[in-house]
Image 1 (cartoon, helix red, strand yellow):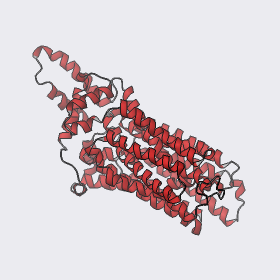
Image 2 (image 1 turned 180 degrees about the vertical axis):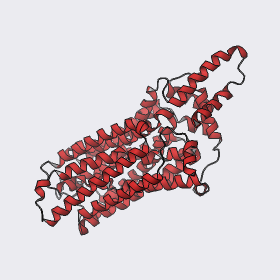
Image 3 (image 1 turned 120 degrees about the horizontal axis):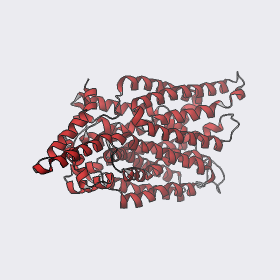
Image 4 (image 1 turned 60 degrees about the vertical axis):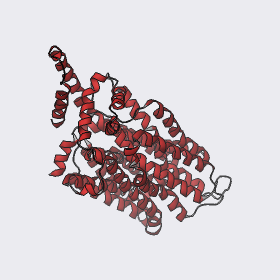
Length: 496
């Protein structure tokens, strides 16, 4: 209702200067545009979905970094210099740094470059990020020094951290109210597409070949996004460029200037209420902002201590340590396909079921599957039971773990800042989420090889299951439902 009232105000303002004999036509126009804005439907929005799909080509490349190490670790730990471009196998300590530095880079990327989105624009920043992404994969293709590998992984992590901070903002700002959740969840779909790509082709390729393949989606992104896709209309309004904002909306909505005027006026009114630039200190001045900050910083912690990135980075070695009847390649492909199917389904449901329900199902499912995995590795280590009769358990548990994770935890934490924060804090809020998420990514992935070596892999999975159980409690009591709600509706809830 709040959104309808705002739209009514916008439409009343657009009536000024209309002659008396145009009154009936104007009323009919107002009713049409009001339905367009509030329903998120009305008109052809095929170009809007095309814009979201094109922008997410960059996400495919970035997400390949999560699983790039899984097939490549077998090569880099090989003693054959013909196979291993480094010449000698890397040590366990080098494995820890090699896999985790990506997360450390993703921590610092948003801190130093996230605010550029408010200075040069969402589109320009995303285009600039394509350059180091392509360069990084090109260097990995020809490098022969582990130090170079580590440095490049850090840089690619910085790029990915900024992408995860800025792309949700762009997708939210070009979306309509009725499809905001779906467009925001496209990130999860394309992220899993990149992960599946590595699972499928990685075991058959050399370091050089896989690195080149990972760079191709970014190259396609730079071409098509740069030429055909417009800048965010919200950003253009904040810069006072109403003419370009109108063109952007016309292109995204595939409507005439007359039919986007009401929406543009509503965007302008919302931006005018938030003219100043938000700082970290400002986040602590209001109860709603403090709670939004707490939610957006804490939820990614539970996302990472679920151990997903450990599974992504070490899936091959984890499966190798089990006694399943399936090959590691077959198992990884099955897991990748199932997680892809689940995330597509969750994307279709997010604007129907809601964010909170999907998060609860996601964390509870992860808790159960991780507990089973810990139990399997404990029984395998104890040698008390004949574990071969449960050889199917690791693949089934990992498959369902990936499936449950992709129901909600994979993407919703990155979507929430664009819904919980007002415009002046969106970039800052998204950067803080990336900082939290990738900071714990680094800590978890860095510590996994050490803990599993000294205390056993079963302890790691039980720690992960405990973390997700705490996540269930946190989400139930603290996270609001944002489906179909305006910022004012969400703010009222956060102030309670």
